[in-house]
Length: 393
Ligand SMILES: Cc1cc2nc3c(=O)[nH]c(=O)nc-3n(C[C@H](O)[C@H](O)[C@H](O)COP(=O)(O)O)c2cc1C
Ligand SMILES: C=C(O[C@@H]1CC(C(=O)O)=C[C@@H](OP(=O)(O)O)[C@H]1O)C(=O)O
Image 1 (cartoon, protein in one colour):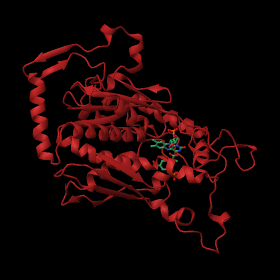
Image 2 (image 1 turned 90 degrees about the vertical axis):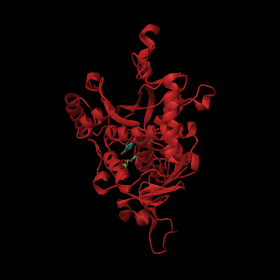
Image 3 (image 1 turned 135 degrees about the horizontal axis):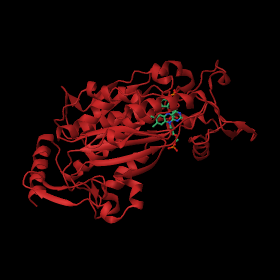
Image 4 (image 1 turned 90 degrees about the horizontal axis):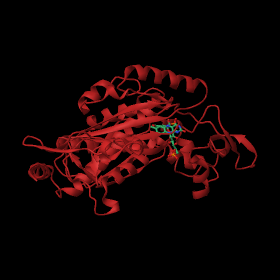
């Protein structure tokens, strides 16, 4: 499967086309909208989220609530567009308009954002031309795509959740999720301001976000995605570009501001002995092959083991600072404070929703690569046979 996205942050809409979905997958806009709403939430979001009510329109590939097997086109309109039609319009400027009045030109690149290097790369002296597409507004349609992937996974008995484990140095107690299922974690974090399972840590995270905002600063954090119900043997060890862990890492790092990724114990593995890292293999009539622990996070040799996938990503603090860092005006080359654009002060909770959906897409894709079918019912049969086979192996 594949998809493309298009759209600028303050353009008329965000668009995506998904290709290769099986037919007969139940799909509604309502299901996608639920996830879009979650992405808009979480403490620390800026004023743009009060302007938008992200909702999707399904324009093709679905009939009477079910996929056809043809490309699925989705659109999310930007409510803010009405304030930007002249500034961001595709048509050449009308003659009676003074460009200076409507340009909202940016010439003082923000350290940590794509402004300066993006300007150099595409020859834009107005760095707004970079910002508009490098903005995480694009993650809206990536969540829409991931919501479709999640609907597909749910049909196969595979569920996925993300939660926030750290913000600005405040770390959630791992016990808050230990031994809990995806559904249980989802129920805990649903109403939490930081999508965190530890309510005490979450309250401190809220304070830390408010403090950072008051100081004109920003903070980052860590999110964890858990995938449950996977069969063993999805992905492959035979070639670098077929390893599922590599694909999941790439998906995580493709999210704006994500700078690191780890599976299971992650970087902690460096401090442990092999006997304290690897997961012992057991077999039972009922469950087939399982593990007595899941310290490797559900992947061996680039393939699923059948245990839950546990993958974490670290998000750096937001680059736009209301107390801006030192920069240079590219017109005069004089030192200047960086531009200040309307901004989030912390988007880690929202980004956890993006991570969940980016990972869901990658898993759905890996499943579609493994089981070759254009029809969901056939695919379900193949999956059931595969599960039986791996159990008896
Ligand atoms: C959900 C989400 C919201 C974000 N909001 C902002 C924001 O309001 N202001 C900002 O400067 N960066 C924001 N970012 C981060 C930038 O998009 C990101 O740092 C920028 O695209 C540069 O890419 P890089 O950090 O991956 O190098 C956000 C990221 C995510 C995932
Ligand atoms: C600025 C960035 O994205 C943010 C993410 C975002 C959204 O819908 O998530 C919408 C944007 O809206 P605006 O720029 O109008 O405030 C930002 O809040 C960025 O990533 O650089």
